[in-house]
Image (cartoon, rainbow, N blue to C red; front, side):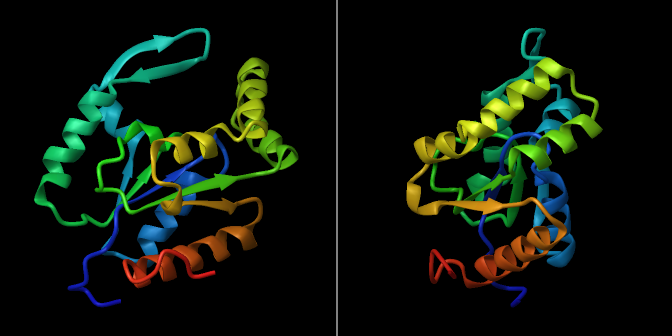
Length: 183
């Protein structure tokens, strides 16, 4: 990859335990020009947390503060910043022409259930996440929040899927903005 070439900003999203963080970290390890941003970590480090939602067992993030941070730190330069953004919902970032690709990771329920169990989620939270995956909530949110032409779906169930997804994304990033798809 040419080090002077501008690289796109992309969002990797999907329900918890589909493998977003690992894919993002390995992608950034494969291309040192990419910058990994985990939205949950960013929110905790900068105290962009509004409250804890007891019913859904999760933190409520301050979307406006997160967007202000990303804009002030990266987007106002008017150049792609080579960001790999990791969060369960693409909708946390408004469609603002600063995001060039959305990749929604998917996983079958049996694999997802095993992964969630290994993370010690409560049964209620586990069932909620499985239901989100069944109804393709993350994929629908991405398609509603962004132009569908930049939203892509990737299956991420096995080590081979992970390897193939990294290769696919590296090629997609390298070819950007010349073509939207390398299929």
